[in-house]
Amino acid sequence: MEFEGQQSDEKVINVYKKHWSVLLSKIILILVLAIILLVVVNLKLHIVIDYFVGFWLLISRIWLALALIPWAFTYYILTDQRLRYVNQKGIFKKAILDINFDQIEHVEFLTNNFIQDLTNTSTVIIQTETGDLTIKKLQHANNFYNDLQNQITKGKQDDI
Image (cartoon, rainbow, N blue to C red; front, side, top):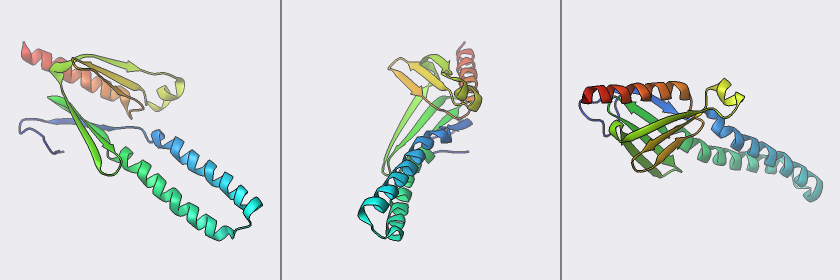
């Protein structure tokens, strides 16, 4: 795999994304609002239900697409030289953060509950010279942590 900004001697180790459960709260909210609005419209306003359902389906699809875009296009690229964090914010805004391994001071792996342990969606905290990067609900967080630690160790051994 190649990515924009990749160095000629840089090799991609793996690409990681946030877990799909990040979207779950938005999907549940859409369904709850749809049920509440359907009941209110049916009881109070006597509006034709077909128009309401069609309108709500349109609005919920737009809302879901707006939630899906940042999730789908936010990822972490681990190479043999650095970690690149690409964060899609909405439709048009994107932020890219590169962290070289020599800037990383400490990496912490946190599992807050049994569900996170079961789904392997833990939190990884990367402490650098300039601040912390907290990655919550990362898919395959354990693999990410181990791969990152391996690359940091290799980088330190190469410096010796």
